[in-house]
Image 1 (tube, rainbow, N blue to C red):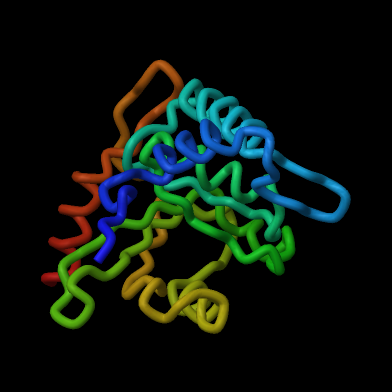
Image 2 (image 1 turned 180 degrees about the horizontal axis):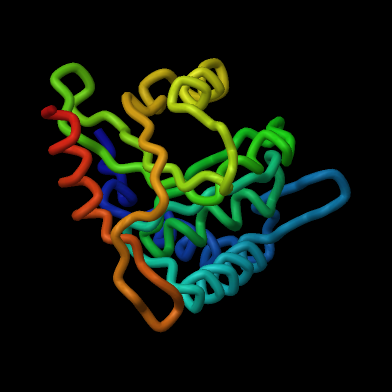
Length: 184
């Protein structure tokens, strides 16, 4: 049996190897557009640099609201480069379907069936009448059932630490808070 040389590689490491091996070969074809492996790697590096400059780092979640096209894959690999988690938004969503949410943060809590289950903390637009049930119902049929939050908390803010590129959410604190709330 052949050993997989990429078994312990990251997505970005595999892209780097592909770009070195097949730099001018097409990595993606989309309509009349042709993106080579070298161009793909360069676009990924540029976007990853920009996201890092905005403060995106390991473990952060970044929503991507794009249809299936080269820009989506560039964003996905840029997130992988930084260790950020991609939250793929359904491109069929309309802007008005997302306007009620200003920010949403998802943390995992221990769950006997799923091992870990999502809990969402949502900062809604002031004056919205959004409810937990409405948000969970909205998710049904749009995302996999195991990704639907077992609880949605509508909050005014979340714990944060000031940083040079904006405040960072204290996810560990938020997770502990979610665990305590789930025990009640």
